Amino acid sequence: MSDIGAYQTTTTDPHEAGFGDYVQLLKPRVMSLVVFTALVGLLVAPVSLHPVEAFAAILFIALGAGASGALNMWWDADIDAVMARTARRPVPAGKVQAGEALAVGLALSGISVVMLALATNLVAAALLAFTIFFYAVVYSMWLKRSTPQNIVIGGAAGAFPPMIGWVAATGSVSVEAALMFALIFMWTPPHFWALALFMKADYHTAGVPMLTVTHGRKSTRRHVLAYTLLLVPVAVGAALTQVGGMFTLAVAVALNLWFVIGAVRIWQRDEAVAEADRYAVEKAFFRFSLLYLFLHFAAFLVEAALKPFGLGGW
Amino acid sequence: MALRPTHELHKRRFSRNLGLGLTLAAFVALVFALTVVKVQRGDPMQGYDHVIQPQALPKGGGG
Image 1: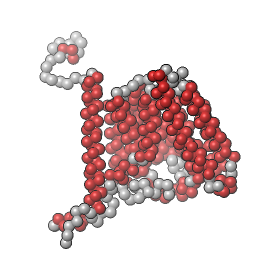
Image 2: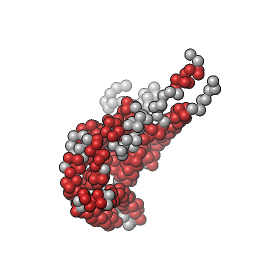
Image 3: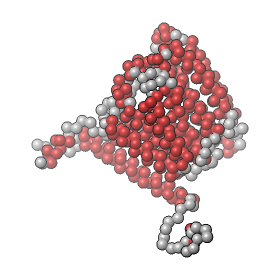
Image 4: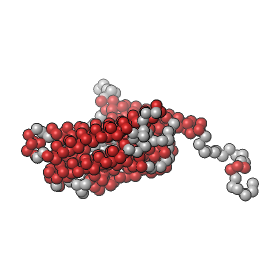
């Protein structure tokens, strides 16, 4: 066989992935939120790490989150393919084989956990391993397709990064770390249910038992309000701990007031009104929820930055 | 028949190889930097260098 023959054989394979396709497997947008919250957890901790260790810790926490994203894409390829929001992901789009996504997910899980243990400590690594297991197995394989409470419990996976960041620095869990966890945990349901309110068709087509599909939209609107109200004491409570201060408390009160007003507006609306303005309130609430979490964690960071000047903290 | 080595497939392969190569190089650099930091800070570590080190022997044990 000549070289030309070999060349012609290789050009017929249309499914060979580029590097960017593998990066997409790691859900880079989700990773950016993980990086930010883990970084805040690490920086507001009372123990400081060497910058190289801190960089490594954040990198491997993000890599672990990316690994769980790849495992999620491997498992959910069938439902991703029928939802407009996810149909262009690398596996359903045919750019990366499902088996490759599984291999990338497993390999990066192992690398991230071992490297986090070597860079920081075993408790942080164990928490990261549990987070990957929770997202890939408990949420993706079990809860997502079996219960409308999927995102309530599954939200824990997204809530762990600031706690892991804190534990990477201190070596143990504390009230502050638990409240940062609780903040994201309680924020997740209203955030995703607002999305589900204006993306119902997607979940319905895929057969994912989101609350909007199983209990209807009126019930989902009540749930958004209930969880938003439950979020308030958690957010204010976090601002009252060592990582908070007057500035954080003021930010928390303002953000939660705005968030509750949004949730009340969602609760008061019915489908006819929402359809009429194309879910403007629900979409605005969803967009604000992203800002809410970002500003909350940014406030913790500002508070920590003010402390050396005798301004931040209680 | 003319050979066209810059087919789109080769570009994709090159991007993958380059990406992987740079990632591995960055990983090696990070592990090296971590090692330097931990050694400079004096984290507990001791290599066997074929010399009896009394401080490493179990207490009460003979040589």
